[in-house]
Image 1: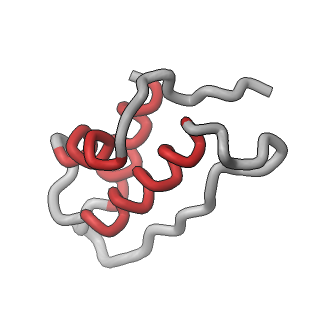
Image 2: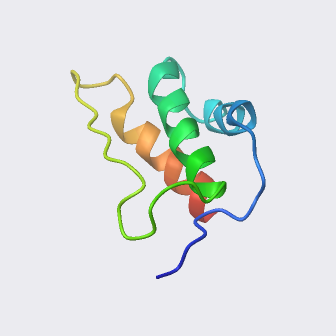
Image 3: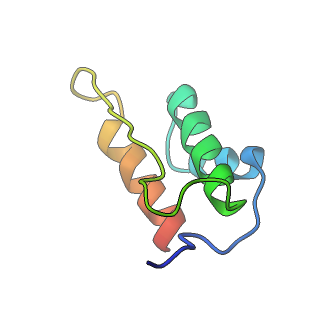
Length: 77
């Protein structure tokens, strides 16, 4: 199983700042993503389990898809 998703050493604030370049107004979700990625990058999550499970819900136009696209861009370039 491939361990690293993102090999860049990053703090939670730098992850949130990188995601904020693409997403506006979704700070609670961005902080949750940053927390999960920081735990994963530190190697503190179980290897045989998912990093996390995040469910985004809301009305049309609030930025759900844009948030996921920003996360994919951050992780995979």
